[in-house]
Image 1 (cartoon, rainbow, N blue to C red):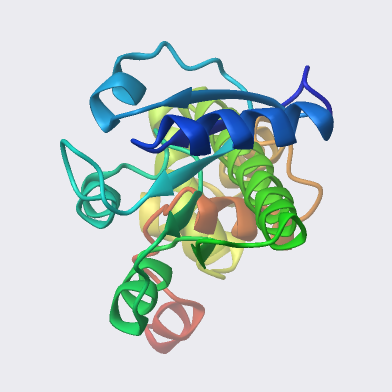
Image 2: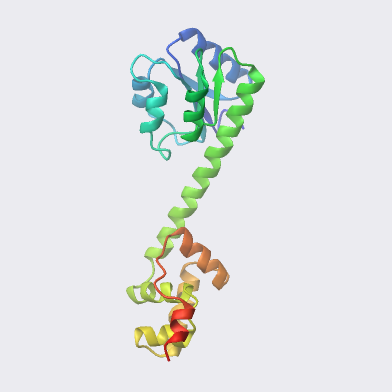
Length: 215
């Protein structure tokens, strides 16, 4: 990771801490920007880059733990808490809500850098997953209304003839729709289509067992 492909945000009301952390990160080849309050951080036009948020617990405008509870994890990067007055309940609470780490001052550079790299890796993964979901959603939106009716039946495990009977169409027509769905969703196999549908939370309203029980 370099300064060009990720960024570390720092929120601490102690300016000396902010300066020290920025100097450390610069020396390690990481871009950073520091703020003395949550309000300043929120007002900053954050670049669309993977990163993490080093967040002090005790801040002048809002407690860091309270801010964590209010955050949308898609809008803010993973959090690393730092505090001069750490306690076990606070650290447990922070980790349960998704914090990467909870470091008590003074902490070592090794501890901090390990947490930062972990947080950035997590953010990279989350961003990739969101981007893939956007792509899959776009593919789903390209399906016709009939193909949207066929998709849940196909992924449910029904045989072609059962799915066709469900919609009152011929088996050949069903197979044509199925082929077009596979192509538009760029699914390599039925199993792949099922996994894609699960990610998109496409509801499955039938099952092969239900379909075979009615003759």
